[in-house]
Image 1 (tube, rainbow, N blue to C red):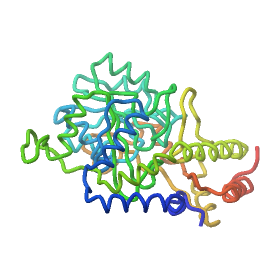
Image 2 (cartoon, helix red, strand yellow):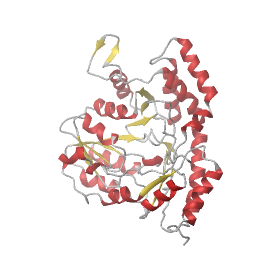
Image 3 (cartoon, one colour):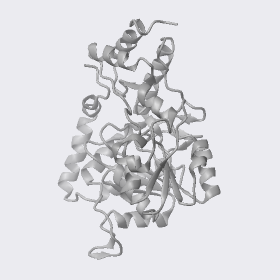
Image 4 (cartoon, rainbow, N blue to C red):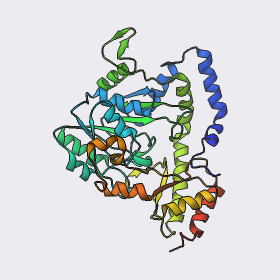
Amino acid sequence: MINLVDLQRQFQSIKNEVLKAIEHVYDSGQYILGPKVNELETKIAGKLGVTDAIAVGNGTDALVMVLDALDIGPGDEVITTPFTFFASAEAISRVGATPVFADVDPETFNIDPVKIDAVITGKTKAIIPVHLFGQPADMDEINELASNHGLYVIEDACQAFGATYKKKRVGSLADVACFSFFPTKNLGTIGDGGIITTSNHELALKLKKLRMHGSSKKYYHDTIGYNSRLDEIHAAILLVVLEKIDDWNERRRACAKIYREELNAVLGITSPAEAADRTHIYHLFCAQSKERDFYLNLLQSNQIQAGVYYPQCLHLQEVYKNLSYQEGDFPVAEQLSQTLFAIPMHPFLYKEEQEKIISILRTSSGGKKK
């Protein structure tokens, strides 16, 4: 089977470095919020060009804690995309606020600023653009909207570590940003983890307190907080991966370039668009086809893993029936949920594997050349 993502190859390539890093932590006797976490926070802040980075338990916690730290809660509205992983909206609901959805751009799959503008109300407190599949959203337009209406902008950058927008790193483009270190992410560990980045030092101090049960001094608590901390072992692993991430992202981009060149000659398949002035780091390579089921079955029958991201938009999820959205409210997102499919994309995809994938798609009965 040619895997959609091959974590075994990825982590085998750095096995000796990772084991050495784990052994160092093991021998140190410091396992939670120790020197490795501090080093990781410092290096990520420096790499992204922000003043502060706050490591937490996972990407979802990062979103929830940011909303909490910004005093967003019951009675407030937060605008986000209906076409993303559930956590983007779940975090809004978790703090008691109401998610409000806006449709996406058909080319980039990211939230459309024009559609955001149409749903801003007096209750709106923030916008959460998602840099979907590794491509940055239209941040200039989103930030301008937010500035005009006095709103916070929270980057959901969980799929986009290393991407750039107009030569600036994702994670430095708004008031605050959230990343996930889930194993399949471009920058991932062998477990859960996350980080928040910001240049608002006062907000950073509040977040550091929140991640430690609302405490800035042991056994003294100023607020109700969370138990959401990145442990030293994961920080040590991530420091190893951080040294590789730019190279690994370039490998992804090289694979994507080949896919785009070869699959654009296939009838019925549309490769993802790459917007100008930004670097797409292809967390996933999602193509479009009205014959998606055909291609999914074709790939599977040839021992090639494929996936659907995402089969049901957030506004149509059972849990959000109370928001009274209907099928047809967000036609672009809904169409994407019916046509997008992901094919293997990772830094360790062998040339012959990619050639096989392309060959099968090009020579299939449903994929004749134009």
